[in-house]
Length: 436
Image 1 (cartoon, helix red, strand yellow):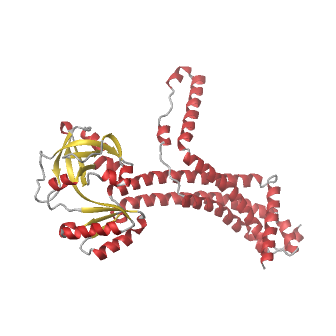
Image 2 (tube, rainbow, N blue to C red; image 1 turned 135 degrees about the vertical axis):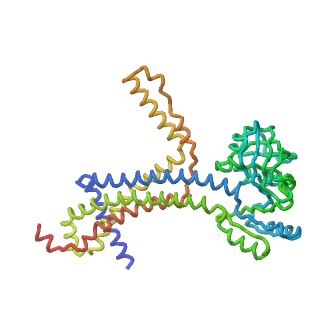
């Protein structure tokens, strides 16, 4: 049985290879080449685009998870005693999947900077040594000026856009003029003065435009006694958030937990829609290429009807003969998808060099035509700085998605060949021989 299957595959591959050799110099050569070229450029474009999109999205997601939402947020500590809080911290220490945890307060504020400039912001009180103890937080926080130092009394670190809106730099003073908090603190006050210790930036502009960090002592002092205390938990595997939440609820029924998936559901939902639309584009591109392969393969089947009849006359099964054309479809898809994959990966990892080359080509082309048509304007030709901006776009290659695009490119070619060659099953040897 095994020998029979192996012999059939060997025969199918042999005939398909012979057909391919003939087709390189026959009428179908151009159609096959264009089909492979279409798959090549389709795979290359989609690998590059999805790598860039992943880079954008993951930079947002990393900043949100490490700086803003954390993986699990736990609240309800204002209704429990200190013993329960201590037991919760011991529980977190004993869980291997928890990388770090820390308490924090947060409140909305209207912040006043220099010359009366105002901006809304979210003030978060965190442990003063968090930048040293939380590696994920330290990785996403990129200092623009000053230091991330919250050890001083009434020290604050601002997001870059927030500091710009307030017109302040390290060493300047800001006032938390309006502050949401407990009932025991004033809503408006001109005495909540903080000294700017540093200015930071992350990969997510909303954090840069609204976040201000102070230490826990300042949070306890200015947010009020009734301000809710929360704990942020970071995990080694974010996919296990539901299991961790279940453990916390079983051990501490009085506490409330919220996953990062629920906390950021609107934002991540928008990213999911964006990626789904890109996958639809993938589908449409390969449908167009598949139609081209389908039409070319139908013509090939018609041109090969004499050979097909001879194969059937010598005992070839219609399904085996059909497999010959499916194999040709596989070779067409493979010869296009693999080079497309290589080019897509090369462009993705060398994005800066690619845009530098494009910038130079466009610049010298414009300079050449300016010299030929109107040499007086040639001195005003400059390279477009936006190409360097495009070149700095982060890329992140996900192996699963890249392989899925490549496999789908090959599969679309095979499917088109299979559908186009179904007429082989209906071909009658006697009719072909009579017509010829």
